Image 1: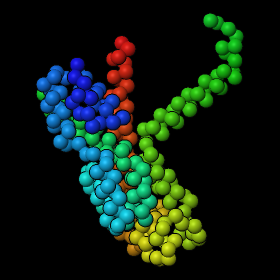
Image 2: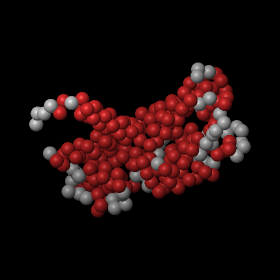
Image 3: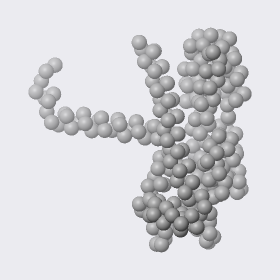
Image 4: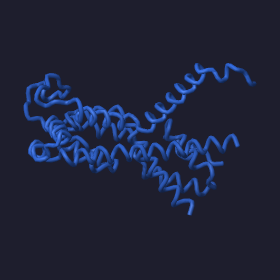
Length: 115
Length: 130
């Protein structure tokens, strides 16, 4: 049974559990393939946090464009991150935001690998 | 174990409260922190916010004395939209009408993702103990 700690040692918490569950019923080569594809496509929560901090300089919502939430990104960009409140909410919530995006990517990649 | 106490009304009420608690906890988990904030903001703007007599604001820009902050304009625009003044809402802030749609769609997408993750993780537990 492939182990997530050997494949992708950088994962933490919720994300690690989710990936372990996806990887569990793959063969070793499939898991290897999955790890390479997912590792290059996933977004790091730390990167989201740093881009989110740019919002305090006046360019809010760039992290939302990176995470593929175009609507909210436009809203943040034209209202200074909803008066900085939205930016602060996303600072608190950056792990969950990244995990939401990453879970979608992982689903997609595992579908492709299992074919 | 069949006893009379099993059918006592107190126990029924306790079980009912327990079920309600579980349900509320589950719903909060599904809507998440972000979705909860959006939902509270929309409800506040729809029912409790009055642009004419707002003394208190948490916006740092208007606390420093900037009058036409774009974010506060958006809030006023949304509250005007909920009270039915669509043209005034459009004049206050162009993004008012799209903002409501975007936020509602976002809440639903958060619930959908969280529910799919929850289903996946729970099916794993079932497999473990089966």
